[in-house]
Image (cartoon, helix red, strand yellow):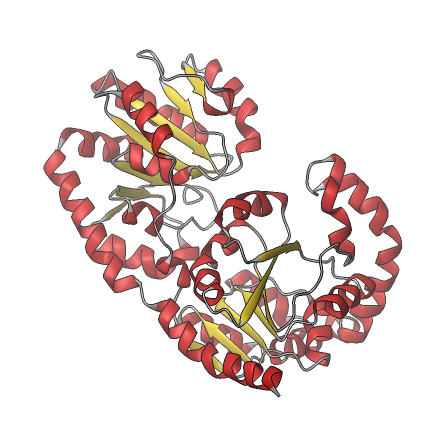
Length: 431
């Protein structure tokens, strides 16, 4: 019954009606800090920028994870002087982080909201020659309107969760046209390929995960030197990209670890830095002494927790700590990228849920480069072991480095698949 209702024509009609409330929605989201006040019109398809001449490759990455994962591809394509790269994202955080990471020749815009007026204004202005969608965010109007203009579209680094498969399978009259609008789909794994085909996708190939081909996370050397001096020879460990429900586990683990390593410093880096003040209040109720990076608090000898509540500095904190716990894995968030920690020589710990990075999880775990834990007791035991046994930790660090060669290479495979499409569009422009 649901599929009889939700199909492209109905979705388009529904989005036309929803456009009536878009100004109210944008105002509310701007007040909540979820939209950029000075650039909110981009969400309605308007821009003050001029479209450059020549071939324009449009790359859409929904938020921070997808945008950072796409950087290897963006950087590579940006080296081609015959191409202009337009990157769209949908969150303020992603725009702030990409501001310092994108090549200078790349254009960034907020993706238009998925109603016909905004989508048509965006496409009419930018006239992309090729559209590359990263991972799994599928906006029906944006995809179908792009396809109507015969713009080649490729779904790059494609992945799809079981939950998404279940949801999309209920509305095949919408999901099939969306997936079949793509000229080519490049899946991360064979499992992703099978799930996409089951939903009606065609021309699906496996290329791996380009996130694993990213350069090492950047660092400000002066900040690194300053914090190294403040930490001195104290033992320390990092809880990276944590979510609600994990910080209390980390705090309890810290107390247990401190009973054996009294000078231990725990660096806590929440996935969403805006939660900083909330976390400071919580940690203080546990009688922990907290230094907050966003407030420029120094690390002193009695600091228990260094709260790293800033954007774009994860590379700094991985370099400060020889041990890294990967957040989003002790709560049902399916984990974050462990390769970033491996690239910077960390011994790695994660919770049981690393589904977003299945290949890396399997490879790192089987090689003993990453330890899996289920609660604060196992987390504190793992950290204690690696703080007490440097040889064990060194073995894990070396194993992580070896794993990198097994997991990389997706970028080259992706570029090989994209080359014929890019060359075709370059040839069309020359004519």
